[in-house]
Length: 286
Image 1: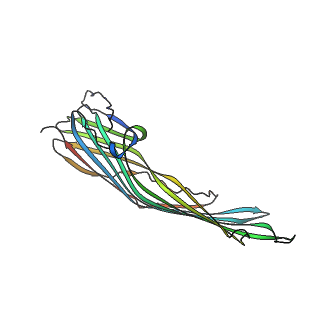
Image 2 (image 1 turned 120 degrees about the vertical axis):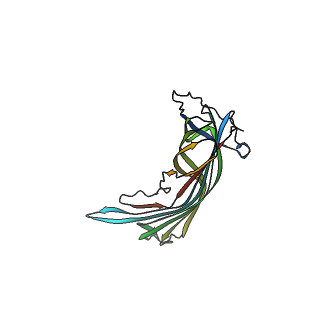
């Protein structure tokens, strides 16, 4: 269990109260994600955001070298990424007449990303002919390919101790037990970690006598970040309030090209869709 810290604020002369609560947070274990009720809470709210869809990235470039008066292509690069995500974010909170809150933020992701890397280049090399004193000059063509699979499967809850994942601001006005208004604003930077496995193959033509191809396998963790912002205005009386809203996503290309070549062509598109909904329930007697 965790014990949220309450941020005290003062009522202004017009009865308005603004409270900014930083969700400086740390992941909680499966045994400690229960919501901690707030003493004297008047309202309980549940906010949900669903984000899903694909992201596409592609990068192509040709590297040139100056040879005399001419520019000669010496390497070609092609990189591609397909990424499908399904993300759920939930925020449960209680608020009292002083504007103090108790909150629990959770987010889950199921996603898979596939990255393809290809590099082709050539160079000249002298090779020794076996059992002779003869060397020959060869034009060596090299092809490097790498395929990476990244799987995201994460379910995490956060409290207000640990690392910072953003901020939620509550601005109530009017009378909390009667007719009033509550503005909820969120500015979150969601971070997801995936398990990556990369397989690389290098082939040379003509191939050396000691090997035809080199294969390497690497495993690592990869981070995907998604900033999310929202503003919700809730006008309440004494009954349950439900509604919907559209979160704002700050979507960046999740693929970072390995080959940063001048004049390279980069394309990024996505079809992510984000929808939000909320419920606000009174906890006081009508």
